[in-house]
Length: 119
Length: 112
Image (tube, rainbow over all chains, first blue to last red; front, side, top):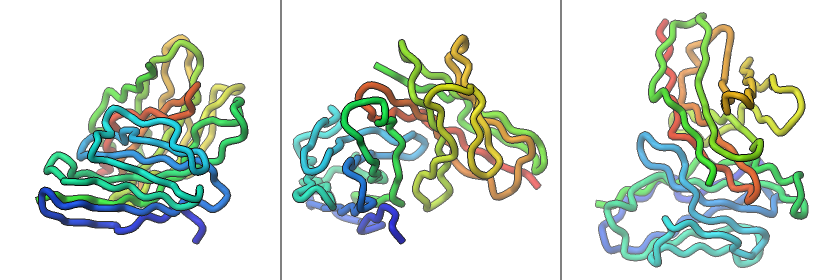
């Protein structure tokens, strides 16, 4: 299977603990996105990378959140000092970007998500 | 900033009936438009997309959508719904930054 994979699929943690999620994108995709989805809502953009560079971060991404993509392949999303409000599905997606022109349409390929429950 | 509105939170149809899910976008220029489907426990899967050209686009699983610039809409349709179509449907748009903005979703319930 060459789709986007996320790990772990489920994580239950106590408030105040740190958690880390990993995402492996489709191998030839140079863009990687993180979204958050809460119950009854659509995905909300958190951040994205082009290769190893983090190009944009949403205001939703507080100082407790950090994302990396060290070699332009897999990515990690870490949440420090988790709060109950962090409980959500964290979605990773990837896409291929060709330069800066209209070839970049925003068509994303999603993983199955990592569900976080903070007790 | 662009935004996407899906006015219907839930839609209930009988199996075999036709379906239309509404989507309105807010953006000055014509955005790129998408419909994704999310089944329970699954990731989002792209159903179809509109970039330019023919305003009626065909997607997978028998879905189609029509772009109407005058109404800023991109409604999803299917002539005959199957029980397996029960899922959450998301409309999304992107342009410029190429970061898709999603609507809140419409939950489709299919009655036998």
